[in-house]
Structure formats: C-alpha cells, structure tokens
Length: 239
Image (cartoon, rainbow, N blue to C red):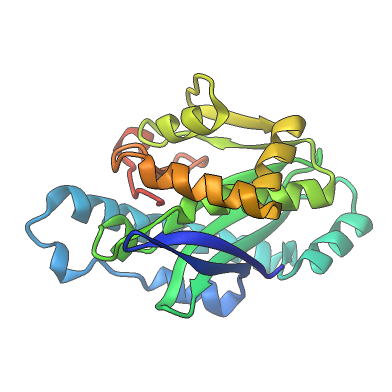
C-alpha cells in the first residue's frame, strides 16, 4: 500500500490509487450527497442514495473501532495489531482516489476476524459513479481484488461477506458459481484474485472483461452484513 490499478473512465483505461483511509477520509465520505442532476432518474438516484447511506453506516461502525483502538491505518499497523493479539478483531478502511477525480472514488470497510479471515463489511463507490453522472467502471472490481491481495499478504485463508439480491450476480460471475446471501473466496481463489492486481497482463484482461459487462451486473451493490438496511433494497452499483 498504496496500490495502483487500472480503471475505465469514459471508455479509456486510466489509473486509480488505493490506500488505507484515515479518520478524516471517513468523515469526508460520510458527507456524500445525491446530486441534483439525478432528479427525474429514480433508479440512478436510488443507487446514489444507497451509496450515501452505506457510507454513513460504515462511518458509524468505524467509530466503535476507533474508540476501542482496534482500527488500523496502514498495513504495518494492522500487522502489529495482529502480532499483539492473534485472536483480536481489527478493522480498516480502504479508499480509492485518482488525480482526475475530486474526492474519494470508492471505499471499503474490512474486518480481520478472530480466526484470521477478512470480512468485507461494506464496499461502495461515489454516488456520482453509481448514479452514472461520471463514466467510471471497474472500481468495485479492483477493490475486491485488492482486498484479496491484502489477504494474501496477511496469510488469510478466506475473504467473505454478505451478498445482497443485487450484488449476488456480480459475485457469481467473479467466482463462477451460484451465490446466495453469503459469498466466500477461499485461499486458492484469493491467490487468483491477487494475481490479477500483481500481473500486468492479468490487469488488462480484467479491465477488458469489465468493459464488456452489462450495466446491470457489472459490479456489486454495497454489502450490509449487519442488516441495517434490507438487502433486497440495496443497490448502489459499486462499479
């Protein structure tokens, strides 16, 4: 970390940057709003509103880990926490930024569980992205792959999370198997996902595949493992 990877902007491949988020970043994401430009576009407005809500829920949960000092602000910090308490539960936030986009493109809240798995609590993109005001794709996919890269670095044997009704097709396509309300990426699959971020040829193939995907199932909705929002209503299209 930080990690550079390609995304698609207006049909062209460009670069974005993923890094650990700070408390300031999380407060900034919490202030996301639905753009007035989405007035009269109910589906896009709903997706953007979901992204804003999930950002707020992630910030709410983050406060607990911040106050209990069980959050990590870097990979080294996370490794130190794990070394000090092998069965501790620790949280970290990731952010995606780019020099061509003002603010944060997307974010993920991830927990390292007591049995040394990574759980994706939330994964979401900026409301202007999921509302299709800006033509950016593959941010959600690259965040998922980057979480797997971290899992490989930490030696975790599983990455898992909740799949909503709308996000399940995304995970089914990536994992090449049926997915219901929970998905799990096992150790051999973690290696494959991580290799896509590491390998330049694999990066290009990943981007090409994302460009061919349809708007409906290209990327996941935000995850809500805590059940604070009905899964069948959530669809913030984390492209």
